[in-house]
Amino acid sequence: MIKNILGTTSTRILNAILNLAILVILTRELGSEGFGVIVIILIAITIIQLLVDLIAGSAIIYFSSRTDLIKLIIPSYIWIAIVIGLAWIIFLSLKIFFIDIYYLIIPPTYEFDILALSLLNALMLTNYNLLLGRKRIGIYNVIFTIQILTLFLTLIYRMYIIKEVSIDAWVYSVYCAYGIGFILSFIVVISKIGSLKLQGTLKVIKQVFYYGLVTQLANILHIANKRISVYFLKAFTGLSSVGVYGAGIQLTEGLRLIGQSISLVQFTEISNSNDKKFAVSITIKLMKFSVLLTSFAVLILLIIPTSVYSLIFGSDFNDLKYVIIALSPGVIALSSNTIFSHYFSGLGRPSISLLANGIGFVVTLAFAILLIPFFGFIGAAATASASYISSVIYQYVIFKKETGTKLEQWLPVKNDFIDFFKILNNLKRVK
Image (cartoon, rainbow, N blue to C red; front, top):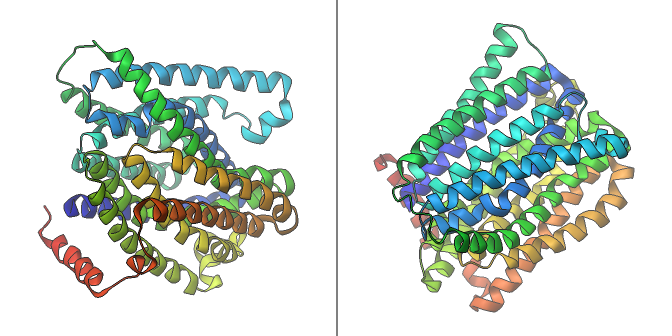
């Protein structure tokens, strides 16, 4: 497990570094308004993926170790085609009957790109989930690294070699990245299929759908908590504010690599085990690592002077540090939220995360209406933090009630630091 955490963390660190470089390129070359368009495109792709994940999301991670891959991959691909078709119909209907809403969520001329990129993204992520469910974390990390490197190198080529400084250069780069990620992961998944028996597939689909329905309702609310403020911002203050807020979100979300890396391995370990005590013990231990390391990383961002952010990202982003300050409590809360969510999902109880995110969504709506019209992107950042904190408080209360853990068990002790440095020392021996 330590090897998997280290491998995944190393991959996420590289991912974070490359994403930071991509963020700097995009903000400096396209400005806050151009980057705002990219944020809107990414959110549209994310929304479509939420529907895809009803069947092809974390549910297939949970079930891929419990059934034949062929019974998961065929229904998943069919479902993806259905979702993309529904998305096209919805886009067309909005364009005809609700043109204002259409242009709020779809940047002009990018409708086809959103659908095509959503298709590639869905196929790629489905294959990734199948690999993770089979604990093929090493090969997943390799393919994931190739994917982000492809995006970075293609963007460099388009922007600086052939001088195509435009949103289209980024779109082309994403096509290449998603395409290579899908092709490589598909090759690996196909090689692991084994049995081609489809008997019992319908039963598996029903189980996956039930698990996925609850999980995705939780994810839909979670994404809504994170992204709905963007539409409030665009409506009240325009694309430039969306760009500044989006840059702050991407920069601080890079810090989530710690909790994401740890929780990804945590989820695969718990979902492949029936030992409740093990699940509780590993959750508490990993939670401490996640929160401590994330807090340290947040502190580094906070001590960087405002002038440095302006120098790196451009003059359009002079207020970026204020967004980061407002987001910081939420980022630390998210490092806990991720661990709690994967604990409950790993035990086959995603309904807990659903309720937690429901509470967070109510908080998001209330704070967004109150803060964003008056404080713009600072209000959006404060709204996000309030939402994340409220979700974590609920998860903690449920976890404490069911496991009987005491407050002192969450406090770091000497052995925790010893274990942490053992992990760092093991890094040199991980192949």
